[in-house]
Length: 102
Image (cartoon, rainbow, N blue to C red; front, top):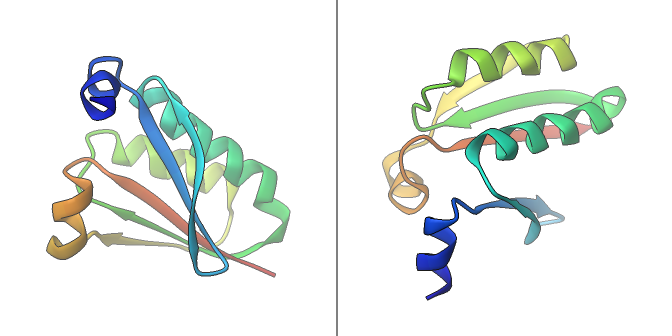
């Protein structure tokens, strides 16, 4: 029932992997707000990021998202497709950001 209501309201979960564990990082009510929340988080961490990667399953807004990431992180951004094993669980259009702190 929660998934049905969440889908109707366009609730997007934000998840984080910290110290080998999955943690809820919040929920927002649209895809645009979800991507903005990821960019806001990157901006907060920008001074400490030593490496950054974006994994995706072909979202429509990927070029704009990568431009926004490049404005925050001046280093090389590794970009990779999400494979079929993970893609089956997250679905098309997913964007994930991974980074290493100094």
